[in-house]
Picture 1 (cartoon, rainbow, N blue to C red):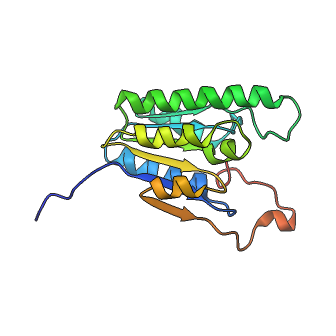
Picture 2 (spheres, rainbow, N blue to C red; picture 1 turned 135 degrees about the horizontal axis):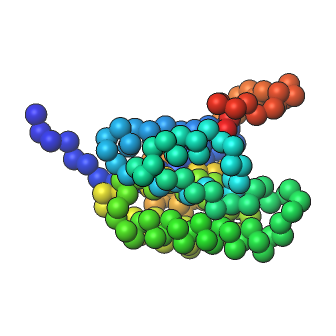
Length: 178
């Protein structure tokens, strides 16, 4: 049997449905299972009580998750300039991780939301994709992936919402949603 070609792919999980971050975390788990070091930068999330952060503590140093965000931009407490500064710091962390070539997988969680809100630019995200080392998988998540990023990606999956518990007033659930 021929040795399977391995190379780093650029993957986008987008769409209006839930599951973008969960799909990315599933890919992270697979990468960890193959001995890859993984880094996840969360561009919006700021909830320190998420299951993925607790898991990252247990799997360190192979898995690092950094919450660079300050939370949703519509919530009180931070001005848009503070959100932009935080997103730019997250972008710098992602670029540093890619430049190091130490990671088998780098994920930019909610980077597309940061783009939509003007916290990072399309050119900056394109630069991240182009800076990806040949052996590194890069995953971007968030709604509304622009066509220019779709064209640069190797795989794009759009999550479609068919039914959601919030429509019945059921809030986000620990262990499933965070």
